[in-house]
Structure formats: C-alpha cells, structure tokens
Length: 260
Image (tube, rainbow, N blue to C red; front, side):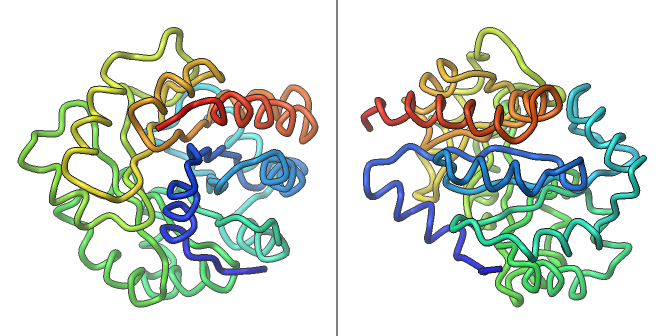
C-alpha cells in the first residue's frame, strides 16, 4: 500500500508529454484487485475503483450489473478498502462513490480510511459544488484529492469555481446521461473539455462515453486524457483481468501516438 499524490502524478505524466489514462473497475467484483494490477501494468496512469451502491445515479447498465454482482457477493466499502490496502501498483488509486456512503461512515472517518487503504482521491458524482464544503475540507485535511465534475450544460461562470475546488483532476463529463459505451464520441465531450482547459491548468480528463481506443485518441486531442469505465468493466466480466490488461494496453498504445 502506497498513498500517492494524485494531482502531482498526473501533472508529472502530462509534463512528460503523456496523455492520461484512468480505467475504472468495480471494487468487490471477483478478482478485481488482479484486474487493477493488470490495468496498472498495461499503462494506466491511475485506476478508479467503484464502490458499489444500491441506488446509483450515474451508472449505466454495465456498471450497474457489475455493482449488483459485487453487492450480491457481499462486498462492502470496508471490505473493498481492505482489499485495496494490499495493492501496490505504482499508480494512484481513486474511489468513485456516492455521498451516502461517505455520510454513513462519517466524513473524517471515511477520509482517514481512504488514506489507510492507499487511496489518493475520491470522485463523488452526486455531491454538487455548493454542498461539497464539509467533505472537501475533511478530504483536504486528510490528503485526499476530491475530483470535481463538470457537465456539458454547466454554465461558463460556474466552471472556474468547479476547477478551483477540484483536486487531482477535473472530470469532464462527455455526455449527459449515465455511463456506457457509445458510438461515436459525443461532440459535447470535446467542447466541454476545451471550455475547461480555458479556465484551469489542472489536468482535464473526459469520462462517460469514451468507449474504445479511437475515441480515447479523439478525446485526448483536446483533453489531457480519459477515464474509461463501461468498456473496461464489460471486458472484465467477459474475460477477467487478462482481457482488462489487453484492452488497457491497446488504448495506451493509441494514446501514445497523440501529440499535445
């Protein structure tokens, strides 16, 4: 277990001319820790770990199915973080969870548990900027980066405030709706990323609707990189950690052809 600086790691990779790749995997699903190891070994710059929740607001069918399987198998936030604490993959780990999970545990206690587990950041998609203060303060104090999200309909005047509050990176939501594979990449994805790049120097990553290597390349010609969820989780459910590693390696190779 190593607690890494999420934003520092991503900035360093970006400065070296690298486009950033953050795959998502559902915690508690089968041998998910081996899939995290495979993704990191194949070239991920960080790995996002989903904490399953019974009433998700952002998750599409693939991730919903993976989460339900994990819950049915007895996965809990405590068990997932315990397993995460045994990982030592050399890249930052970021959890994605809904605020109810944090509230139930207690803000300071949850932040401390992330640090103990080697987790560097948290994405809380149902926590709006205006209500993020208490959690963000607890996370800052513990050294956990709170990744903030912006959507295609976020007004221009709000973007700088989101970026100022963000830590780690800014999550540029590519399309309105839930997660899932789509063809083609939505035009809104690169438009929003360009707007965000105009108001912040923090890494900007496009997620939601980035489904394959070609779309990752298209997104990364504007953004600093991508978050890929449903496409990774589907392959994990179909072929296990090996297929995750193959897919991440293919995307990594494609991204390495992109010049800033």
